[in-house]
Image (cartoon, rainbow, N blue to C red):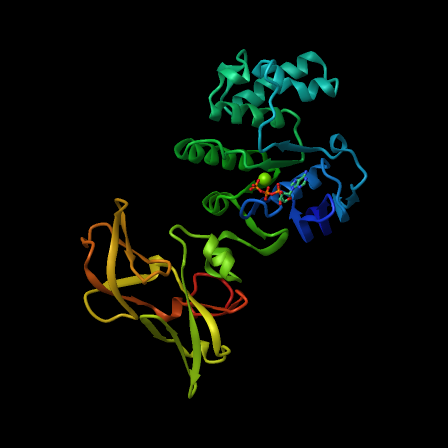
Amino acid sequence: MTLIEMKGLRKVFGRNIEAVKNLDLSVEEGEFLVLVGPSGCGKTTTLRMIAGFEEPTAGEIYIQGRLVNDIEPGQRNLGMVFQNLALFPHKTVAENIEFGPRMKKVDPETRLRRVREAAEMVKITHLLDKLPGQCSGGEAQRVALARTLVTDPSVFLLDEPLSSLDAKLRREMRAEIDRLHQRLGKTFVFVTHDQEEAMTLADRIVVMRDGVIEQVGSPLEIYGDPVSHFVADFFGSPSMNLIPGTLSQESGKARFRAPGLTVELPPSFSQAPAGEATLGFRPEHLAVSQNGGIFRGEVRLVEPLGKDTLLYFDRGGERPLIAVVEGTRTFREGDTLGVSVNPDLLYLFGGDGKRIRRGSKGTGIRPA
Ligand SMILES: Nc1ncnc2c1ncn2[C@@H]1O[C@H](COP(=O)(O)OP(=O)(O)OP(=O)(O)O)[C@@H](O)[C@H]1O
Ligand SMILES: [Mg+2]
């Protein structure tokens, strides 16, 4: 069932800062929806419009079928965790968590019980008497979460709740938010600019760019079936190798050429229009050998990551080509190697950045 629906949503700040351009999006009940995109693409603005802290310049927002454009934030039954946490510095953790229910005039006994339950859920019972300033970054994030949990909202709106944490803590908190979502069965709308966070948490990912939606899909669809150069580049670490060049159609055969690289494309590309194009292939889909390959080049950098090793190939001024190989194989900087790729795992993007074709084995679900 659709819980939140946004139609033609637009937000202009001042005279001409168009933060959100024309957004149509629905959020299904119980799903974990992640809004992801680079800084400034309109994620926070979208979330704040849902929450009611920002008035749309145009368009409608419906929650459970009811138009809420003119409904106060407090009446929307949503819980928002802000990008900057916004905890009261002079109130204890317990008082911070208790604030919402107190404003709603919940009786003291129920308040106390709810604060305890929320604190237990995010494991901060031992911090209840501290001030926010005496908490670590991760602890403060948990307090902010508890403060929202305690209001028992129908939807959780989380704006980069993990961004101030170090990598390890972020992974831990990520798992905890995932558990919380499963345990509560509530709807989550989660904003991040971290593609990995989006991939691991989301049921559906909404990729935003410059105030518009670029693509919506499951993590696997977004990864395997990116609709544009932008999405292909944004997801995956290291990201997809994207090589600008030219596509030609010669007697029914598609051929891609770029400096130092010529690739015969499989029959599925024979309808692609000739001209300026970008060829894409993921680092993990490359095979490296002494001879042959679509590209031969010198290894400029070897980056051992343990299980895998990254090889960076020099492409003379262009972005380096990156291959992922098993960590047990040894390569040295300065080695000249050939790189090959299964043609069924190739992606082709047009001059406008839109995907034209992909090989028949892209890891996505739908054929191109
Ligand atoms: N109150 C405001 N007044 C004027 N411009 C604003 C305001 N809030 C946001 N903007 C602008 O709107 C655009 C979108 O901002 P928004 O905060 O939604 O981005 P974001 O995707 O959340 O970015 P980040 O990842 O950096 O948090 C930006 O260009 C920003 O400068
Ligand atoms: Mg933001």
